[in-house]
Length: 256
Image 1 (spheres, rainbow, N blue to C red):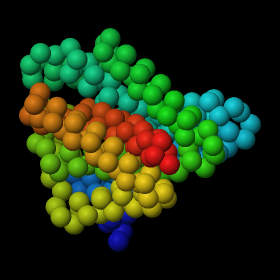
Image 2: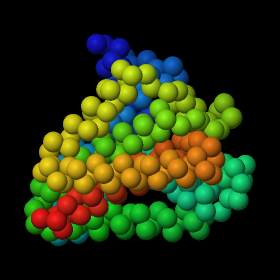
Image 3: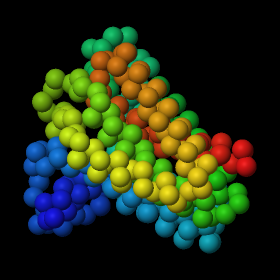
């Protein structure tokens, strides 16, 4: 049990800026095995976002509460996944072949594709959350609690299904480049899917379907353009599937 707790804190320390206990040892091997708990990290981030939104909406208009709660979660994660999305937009938008795409994504500077992609994604997420909060603040909180674990399960699924394409041993995500075994995948799926029980049945089905479609689309593109995934592409997948989850819930509302 202690080893499992250490793996969770390893994942939490890697994907967020939250402090973890000093007694948790660090190694690339532990990070390799911590992939099973990536969706559980989403529980923590989703809870931070939901709590922030509830606190802010009591004193501010809902639109500002949405934006500021997003800022809180971005601060908590260090914009880890948003950075991956921006790099993916630059690389896939500006690169013509695999080598060029990987080189562009490695560049720490942000280009026009990354800037536009980041702006549109943040606007889309803010607009979706604002619409979700039109009837009740609880709807926003539930969406956050579901979308963050589910979207991290989407990224984890790519680790299991696709090959890692960077040959640079110093790449930050290189330790994650290992397929999960059956037990690890089951743990990740459990933490990623369990929060769907917070939603109404149709909302849960639409959220899951939208996230799965976004993940399948991303996987197909990554395979076609690069032959696999990189750390930046995992972050991009998390961002796209998070937005897809919000959109899925809104689509369910249209049917009801």
